[in-house]
Amino acid sequence: MSSKSNLSEYFANDPPSFFDELTNKPKSKEIPAESIVSGTSSGTSNNMLSNTFTGFFQPPEFVETPELEEPIKVTEEVRNLWELPRENDHSKLIMPGIHLQHDLPDPISVAVTQHLGEAELANRKILGVDDVTQDERGLRNLIHAGCLRTAVNLTGRLLTVYGQGYGRAGQPAKHSPHSLQLWFTRLALLAKLGEFELLQTEAEPFGQLTAPDVFYDFYPEMYNGKSGSIACFSFRLLLAELPIYMGKPHLALDRLSELHVTSNEIKQHYIQLPNKTAEQFWQKRCERVLHSIINCGLMMKKFSMIDDIMDGTLLKRSNLSKDDQRSLYSAWGRIYLQIGDIFGAEQKFAVSRRLREMNSAPDLRDLMDKGLIAVAKNDFPEAYLIFQKALHLDSGNTLILNNMGVCLLYAGKLKDAINLYEHAINQNPQRSLNESLLVNLSTLYELESNNSKAKKFNLLRLINRYKPDLNISIEICLKLQTIN
Image (cartoon, rainbow, N blue to C red; front, side):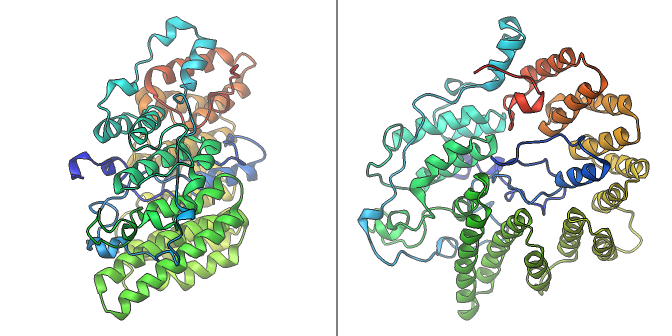
């Protein structure tokens, strides 16, 4: 497969976790998106922190390829190494299939039709499946345009070509790097869209990718004796995290722990050879799994386990750069804030600051950390000023804008908070029509007046024109009921 025809440039980052510096609030089946502006001031602090890291998962936003999975270049043999099934049991082969007979519907179109009518719907211009080439290039174009539901529908067509379409679950199938990449893309998109029940059903045949037919060794004639896993590592990580979306973190922790054990064994194998480059490559993969384990631990409130991983594993690496150390200590401090330990958080943030270059001005990370401390202390005017400085470094960042709006609200400036959000949306609707910002603005409209519906309809008009998809429903984003 040529580099020009893969999807990886639009899925180039690691799966978001609490290690991301700035991220939107993720969702799970058990935790619907909530407004930041709810409850007491202490509740506000927790919700603001949850926009930075939550312990809940966001789905991966990339398809793994040799060029962009990690910056460390290794051979295919190193990349694809995995523990082979102990038995070549043909009764345990993977036989997946699409479970939707028809395409995923467009919920924004449904809401616009019900609330605003067909005339407004005519302003909705998004790509359909038939508007792009029926191949990976078309899929790449849909993802780039933000048409994620349409991209899911195209994966259904492409998998049908492989004999894995609707009604084919349970039927024998041959797997290839391309077919498994299509499945990974489809399942990752379903997770991103919050289609968790369909995700669970379609992912079930894959198990943990331990069946013999997802290894090159199962097809010696087809792949000329090549060995190793056909499925990419990120597919294994997604399947291990899958129980999180269904509210089963204990099961996810068990699966992630198994994944880490195998990854660490492969790393030890390359230490003994020795092969330094391969060792570093697998060290990075081990760390990716540990990041997911920490997120899982946050959900389960296993804070001692998190401390052990942070202090005993991640920060003990001899080749850890100062910037990586800063990121880890900053993230660690935010964990302490989430559990209400302001003093502990300040200690971690202080270490992070000391690792910054001497005499350099505070950067985005420093300002966010400082602002979150102010929020935790209920000093909302001071937090607002700090976040305002952060916004100058990253204009239009929706997380910072959300936090500024919350600070204004709890400083008694409801109308200023509304104006802040509305100005951001008018300046850059594509970026600022962010799910969490929409939830917050809709809540502020309700606090402002009993006649909030007209303003919500205006938001719906903007969504109709600028957003191909939302990751959470219109009912949650705008608090507008739609009839199925």
